[in-house]
Length: 553
Image 1 (tube, rainbow, N blue to C red):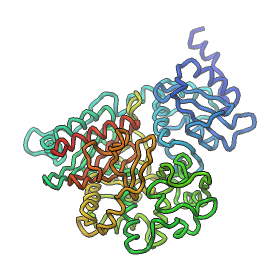
Image 2 (image 1 turned 90 degrees about the horizontal axis):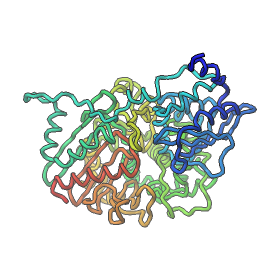
Image 3 (image 1 turned 135 degrees about the vertical axis):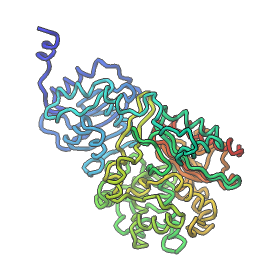
Image 4 (image 1 turned 180 degrees about the horizontal axis):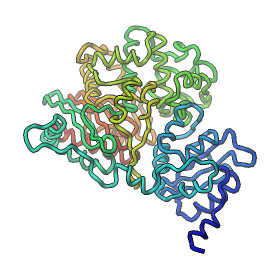
C-alpha cells in the first residue's frame, strides 16, 4: 500500500460540524501547529440551532499571524474578544465560505456580534488565505460542505496585493502627452517631495494604493493625486470613489448643525424628543450631544448594529428599539465610540425633523453647497453595477501576513443601502472642499453651508480629559480635535498641526482635517487597513511630511 493509499484508508469520515467526532478530528488536525495563545484572537460562537449531540458554544482561538486555529466545544470561562450568535449554517459560512459570502453574513440580519468588530477584518483575511492549510484539512472532515472554493496558501499568493510587488501604475508617457493623473503625480513630486517619498514607501508595504488631496490657502497650492492600485490590477485614479468610513461622520454633524441653526433641534435634548419610539430600558437618557461626542453609556463592543450594519434599514431600526443602555455607567465618564448605532439615530432624527431622508438631506443641504458633485451618500443599484469593477477595495494589511483584498463595504448591499456615518464614497478632492468650507467659516464653493458661529460650536473642544486605547482624545460635536499636547498616542493628524485643527479618521484607512492656523486642508485615503499602531505611525509620517514640504513645520 502506498503512503497515499494509507492516508486515504485512515482518513476519518466527514461528520457534522461541531459534533464530538468533528471536534476530536479538529483537535488532531490543528494540534500540531504552533499557536501563541497569549496573542491569539479569542472567538466565541453561540449556535442558535445546534442539533442534538453537537456543541452549542464553541471557543475558537485564531492566531491571526500564523493562521493556526484551535476549537473547544466546552464554551469559555473568560469572555472572548468577539462573540458571535448565529446559526450552524452561518457558522459554516463563516469558517468555510469565501470572502464575499463572509461579508454577506453581516448584511442579512440573522447574526449578532458583541466585542471589538475591528478584529473581524483580520479574522476574515486569515480565513481567506488559510496559509497554514488548517481550513483545507478541516474541510475534509466536515459533512455537507459545498465544493471547495479556490483558496488557501496558493490562492492567497495569487490574490494578495501586498506580497512585495509594486503596484501596476499605468505606463508614464515619455512625451509631453501626459494623462492628467501622471501630470498630477509629477507636480506633487515637485511640490511635496517628502510627502510623496513617504507615500511611495507605503505602497506595496502597508497599502496597495492611495488617493489624497490638499489645499493650502497661503501658497495657493491645490493638488489631487492617486498612487498604486485601488483593487488588484486596477490603478487608483483621482476620480475613483473610495469609501470614507468614519470620515463620513462630520458630514452628518454638519447636517445636525444646519437643523440646529433653524431651531429644529437642540443637541442637548434626548434623542427620544425627536424619535418617540426610542424610549425604555434607558434609551430615553441618550442625548444627541452624547452621540456627537461619543460619550453615551453604551460601550462600543455592545453596539446593537455590529452584526447588521448593512442589513435592511427597517431591521436595524427594530434592533435599536430593543437596545438596552447600561444603568451603572454615567455618561461622559468614558469614550464609547458609536460607529454604527449613533449615526443611524442621528440620520433618523434628521428625517424626523426635516421630512427628507438623511441621504437626500446631505446631498441637497451639505454636498451641493460645498460643490461636492462627485460624492455619493449612497450608490443607486445602477451606479453600483456600472462602477463595481472599479470601486476601490479595502485590503487588510499588517501583522506579517500578505495584504488581502476584501469585500467589506464593497458588495451591492453595502454600497446601495445607507449606512449613516460610514459609507459615503467620493474622491478626496471633494472631501477637501467640505473641510475648506468649514475652515472658511461655513462658506462653501457654491453656497453657504453653516454660519461661522455654528462651525465654531461644532469644532470646539467639548469632550476633554478622556483618552481611549486607540488614542482618541479631545472631541467636538462630530469632529476629532488635534490632541498632540496629550502625548504621541493622541496625535491625530500631525505633530506640526495647530491645536485648532479639527477633522476625523476613517477606520485605519482615511483621514481628513482642516488647520485654520496654517490655512491647510488635507484628505487622505489608504486602501490598506493595518493595525492601529502601524496606521497611526504612517499617518503621522505623512502629515508631518506635508507640513515640512509646505514650510509649515
